[in-house]
Length: 88
Image 1 (tube, rainbow, N blue to C red):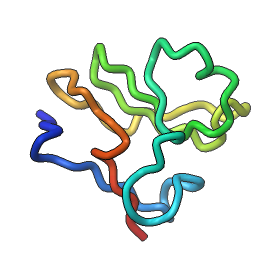
Image 2 (cartoon, rainbow, N blue to C red; image 1 turned 180 degrees about the vertical axis):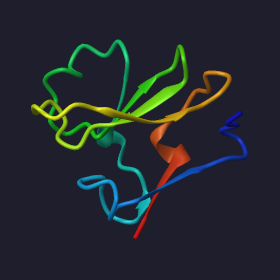
Image 3 (cartoon, rainbow, N blue to C red; image 1 turned 30 degrees about the horizontal axis):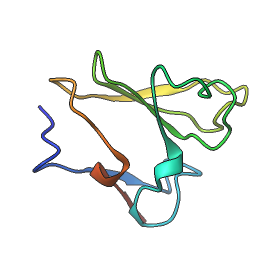
Image 4 (spheres, rainbow, N blue to C red; image 1 turned 90 degrees about the horizontal axis):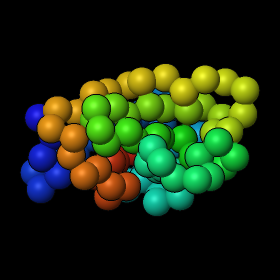
């Protein structure tokens, strides 16, 4: 169970290409299910579907490559960009 008050997700930028520089995740790289521009925004790399708590990595945003589920966070937490850290 992910608790935004106490927990962080760490993603290695060597594994998740295009995810940004080391440090906190840039806000423009994270989208949430139901946002109207998910299908057209090539900047998004992480997609969060809060209902099941699923987190997806999309290597090319709105490009032809499919998003891949990388985590399921129990309890459907209110995940934000500040909860994710990029490491090298």
